[in-house]
Image (cartoon, rainbow, N blue to C red; front, top):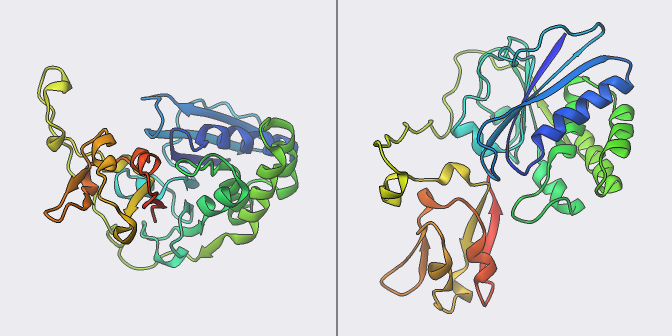
Length: 284
């Protein structure tokens, strides 16, 4: 039995990805299973979904704690969530990122693969510039990197079960299939992640509204980072006025500066900037 765990953020399509994978496995003549983990359901919050594929009926109904494959739709989760926890030796870690597969940190003995699904989704017009929907591109990459389902079955599943822009999603899956990059299993001691997981912020009893935003950095939510091009900035301060998280401050010269630890990447500053001097750039 092949067990797969998906990690993403609300709005990226992780739950739909597990469902489409199960539908494709069924079209391949397999016995699939798919279900999400329901926690804090909101846009941008971490989301987990699971899938199992076998040649025989699947009786187990528990969450996947020792997956053969881990799929990460948002590279920011690598720094905040133990995505590879329980991944079996010889298993596969597939991440949506611009980073080369050889550069991915992870446990010893696992295979690594990467695909720039964000770029593919943006090119195919899937989702928005702030929250591209990367699931079909990632599934195409998964089809090739793991062999879990055939690309033909995945194409048929998307055509049958994706109501919005099925042709663009099918093209994204084909792009992901062709553009996935793989690396062999890592040997030697496991490398530390580039950004260690930050310690949890203690929250006292009582309503969280009494906490200052200074004590609750929310950068872990971010998938896009605002980049301020000073050469076009008029110092109108609209970005500072409209930022809901106090993530922009004004320097002594009057130009805005990003307080990255508090930026959730909502994109309001870019949307409200009159001269359009702020660009939202994808993480990793």
